Image (cartoon, rainbow, N blue to C red; front, side):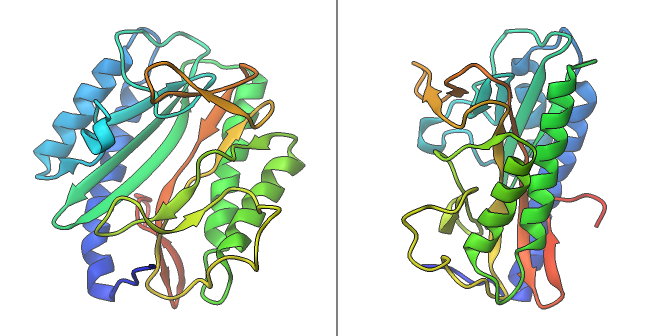
Length: 253
């Protein structure tokens, strides 16, 4: 069931989203060769708690950290470790915040120092895919309009969208209906749910530089590209309003 939120609920949800966005902005400043992903995780947890919020991912279905740190060929759900980031890596950071009854969820991929042209393009295309997805989250469109916009943008740039993981509704629960794939399923019936005012959606394209297939490592969490190619991930929590989509995890709003 899709849960629509009132204006007041969206306003309250925006508080959680702002904490998530500010946390990501601060963590971004720490990214450099030599830092461990565990250090990033510890900072994320401290920052979120210092704002009176709760790290949404820690303990969720047994996930052991506050931050997902996916490096290079890791797609999503990379577990922080003592491994140090190296010059030329890319790292995707995904974090969620729970605050006063609502969740906020955001992700972005960052270069570590100077990176390859392929990595630069992958990051730019994935960010662009998120933007066109958000632009499609308007009243009267369908969920698969978001999916179609993301897929078209990515494939026109000769990359692949991951099909094993999807975006999702978000609000009082971290994962709510509807699911938001980053591709249009061949077996679809119709175009998915109609987008309505009050929907709150976590739109999150995951894009591979090579083929779309992924594997899960033995830790049970970390998804990696099957062909070892780079992967990037961007995400915003978006509220559908009569004035258009409002990305609640963007700091410049």
